[in-house]
Image 1: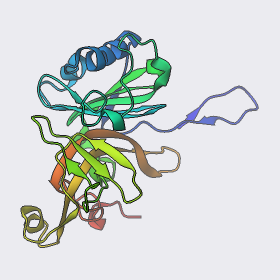
Image 2: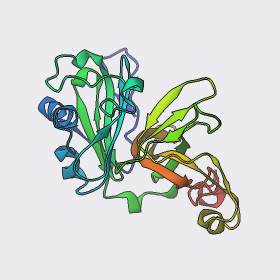
Image 3: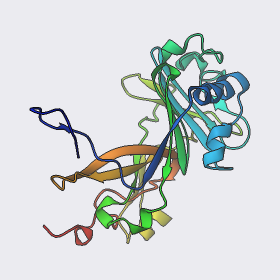
Length: 261
C-alpha cells in the first residue's frame, strides 16, 4: 500500500490493514472513564461491556514504575496494585482523576472477544474486536489463536504460588528472583500425557501450565503479496492444558491450507 506524494518524491509505504479485525478510536473521555472505573470504583468496564456483554475482563497495564494486572470475572476487580498480597510487587494505582497520567505507558482491558487499548498518558484509546467477514477470508489471512506460557517455578519457600480467593490470583517467581502477579490460578508447567488435550491432539503430549492467550491478525501487502502478522488482541488468562495447539499443529498452519507458490 502506498500513499501519493508530491511530484519528484517516492510514494510513502503504509502498512496494510489487519484482516478480520475492527479497530475503532475512542474519545479521550472514554479512556478517562475506563481508568476511573478501574482504579477509582473498582468495577467492570462498561465500555468494554458494550463491546462484549457479560464476558470476564482482565487488565494488563504497563507504567513507568511497574506493572498492574487484574481480573474481573463478574462485577468487581481484583487488582495487583490494591490486593494486600501483591501490592508490594505491583506498581501503585494511578490517580483515577488522571493527575499522574504521565506514568501510564499502556493499559489493555480485555475479554475473550474484545479489548480496549489505552495508549501512553491515557491520551488515546482504541477498541478492537473481530470483523464480520472472518468467515470469508482465505485461510492464510484468518485470525489465529495463540497462547504464551507464563513462566515460573515451584521449588522451595520462595516459589510461585496460588493466592486463592474468589477471583484467582497468583505470584510467579523465576529462578533469577524476578516476580510477576498473574490473575489466574497457578499451575506449574509440565506435560499431561493422559489428559483430554493430549487425546484431542491424537496422542501428542499436551503441555499444562498458566497461559496468556492472544488472537493474531494477519495482513497482506497489495504490492508484494507478502503476508505477516499485523496486530494482536489479548483474549484471556488460562490455567491448565495449553488452550491452543502448538504452531504447526493447527489447521491454518498445516501446509495443505497454504497457497501454492
